Image (cartoon, rainbow, N blue to C red; front, side, top):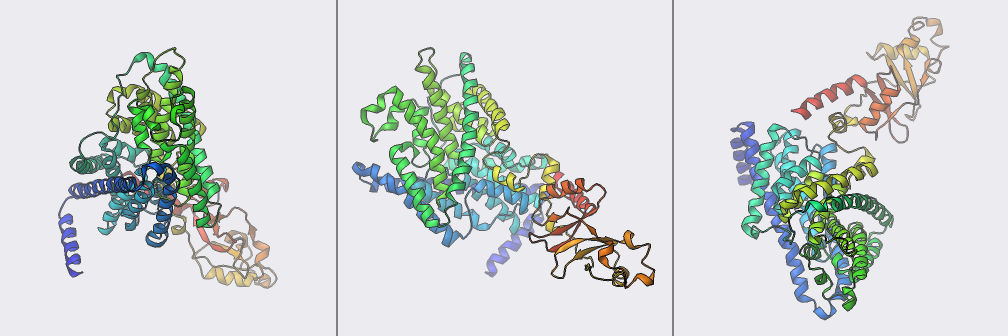
Length: 591
């Protein structure tokens, strides 16, 4: 123990000897290396579990086993979260966004490894989710934890959190540019000149690990052909369809998870979801796991291979059946993903987004090809569809363009990627202003945004701004009692409460100033004679944006009372103190 403390002191002393810029670069290297290694560990863990199960399962009864395996994985993940992790680690990217806006970018050190274990079990056993959100959660926790251990300030904790998130995404996809753009678009990271170099260093360091350990091949080898200008109208159509599918993806996910979670008993919820996903996987084998193997087949024009070992036999060669099958799989992937997450599994929406987008692009091309009007390259459209749906579901067109180009090597298709992603993004922002990651936070008022004013307000905490040095008075108190209280405070107003601390109103010094020295009224006048009733109060759970709006409605009011859900008086918040905190936070936020 003493050796660990001594080493920590030496490390801190070394870092303190460096300039701030040098210190951040050194830490970015450490965070990038760690997050890249975590990405490799997760990838190999998922593949290892799949390999063990594949070797163990008898191929003649494989389909029947697929009815049970996802549920078993969800059960194991649920037990792990309940008894070992002991904290909610689902929806990792949403957790990161919440920590940035409400917890000073501080993530639990447990989150470094718990999402890796839980998601490896969930996905390895066939849970219909992606590994990207858990690894980003883990990478962000690495950066946040290192910064916290070194007692860095909020700005630097956030920077290292962003370095970890960017590095982990870059590591699992071997996509450094996408990692950086991801932190800007999705994590709402406020990029400055001082943060560019650490982010670059972190992502470059991170991708070296999978390059050395896993090779330099792209994540999705494909048979895409060069871009043909004549196909632009069809990529526009694809963009519109991706926008509509993105709307379905977001709304269906939130709706299904919300309804499933109304089942209060976690084991009953697990059983319902396990049965649901088991049946779906049995009928639609591409829904098993991330679905990347089926997606790779579409990207390589090997559509028939998707049906190998399935229950459909010769009917799988029928063109109408193929269209209907993949259309059902496209819509039901959202259902199976929601069942997996709501039932106790741990995984993200990143992978399912790529899966649904790839199928969407394939279906558009295949449907047009069946008209015999024009022959479209189905692999190209599957690849571009991945980008189109990502741009819509995540509200991140740049991340979609760079990520798909990097993970497929499809730089020849940058133009259609840009067209489809832009159209999908423009359409979805009309239909749904928040992404799959920010919808819940926006509803709670906990979302930090690229609007700097709004972002700074989100960072302010109401409970830190409440002033409590007011003398409480009661309606039945006499003027004489009130005058004594006035002489004992520098405040010019007094909260009026009941004997059990329920807020009633306010007495202003100006309202009693003209008679406060008339002793003849000390016993005949009471607080109730001077009290002003007010309904414009702040609830302790209100966001700072809501508080600001209440001040605007109150015109000349400089102080508002704060109460809890049961109307118990807590204190006051002043406009001047709020503006002072806003100004201080704005300075820190902008540096």
